[in-house]
Image (cartoon, rainbow over all chains, first blue to last red; front, top):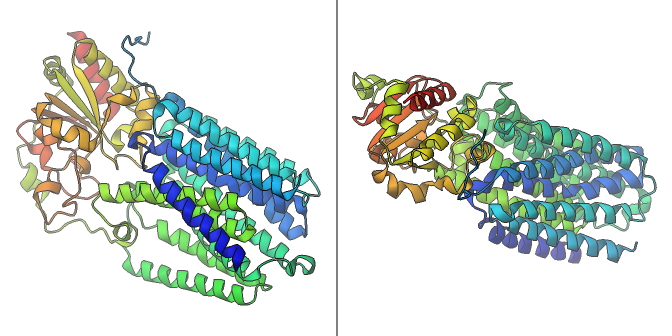
Length: 100
Length: 465
């Protein structure tokens, strides 16, 4: 029970942190916000690594390995695609160079 | 490495995630923020690899290599116009991974040598939560992906009884979760619960129409975070709990913003049966002989004399990939001294921020993109407003007709501009299924063309002068 209360405390406090941080993200960045926050929700990868690596049973190892593939797609794909999008956001510059 | 050091590394990762998300508050700092997030993830992964529980690395290496390859190819190949389905797919993988990890942990916890040392009630309840949320996220996201990719139709399917059935299924899944908590050794309950929740996910998203996808994607984003959080309770791991709740909060905020921008409740989006209004004015009453078709040359003439032009992009711009042509038009207008800005409605497109990403891809500076509240008071000074592939978000009926299905929805006040040019293939209604009086106004000209072709021909006519 004590561990649960500890975990619950962390959960509730983190939600408040999340609200504070995310409300400051401007609408223009909402798509990168989704893909970027999605990439960090791939943190479940650490659970997948533990299950795939500890190999308690064949079943848990296989489940862990599939989860690991999913989570890695999530993490690598998420951070890369977010980077690709964010690189494109540029401010106006006074002397714009015209293409061609 | 000892457990304490690993947990410290997780704390560091969580801090980096928070600082990284803070960086997203401005486009200038956003790239750095994303990199900090990636660094945090790397630290968390490396620390986990040092855990003494890990006996063999073969499966881990294989899994990471396969996942990284697939992820990298997806991320580098996907065109910007396909970003909504990409985000949907990534949400799905995250949710699926969480449900699988919860399942694996449950299997491990039931081993005789582990059993005594785990808090079984917390573990089984959290696994049930992770299994339900994860499966809903995975299958719901796959349906959203299929709809956005055009594999299945994206028309709304109004069947009210389906939602009652789905609610019943959700109760069954929760019931199975309670059974699992009572008898954690019965893995069958877990798989049954995942199977039932999978059907819930499919049926939840299947009836929802394309124009409501921004809400659905934001919601699934939130679910993928909550699933990770639930898995954190399974593993008693603070890194997962913190990160999952950050993402959960982010998704909920976006969902709320999207719903508010449509003046609809989340319940209405998810379960509402969207019936095209019978009560509202008929198309022929609204349009009857008052619609003026125009030509690219006429629009070019109008633009030549304009000092302030606002472009209003909608989903039609994404469909016809007109963003580069729009950028060229912007540059041509600026070259003649015209002030050009973009008015972005929060639900324009198929996901939050969809238009912003497309225009950024075409090198339109982000400071020219104005939010609804900022640009609306300025429309009266606008010489020409060009609406490209948008419909319901510029329909003045939202302000004037309390019986309209979009009544009260905040819209871009395009009709207040001195002249309006609408580039649209036909007078067909938007998602709300109602006619748009904007198209029949005295100061509105309709250019009946595909968005890209229309913009290109206006540009050609402008340059020919």
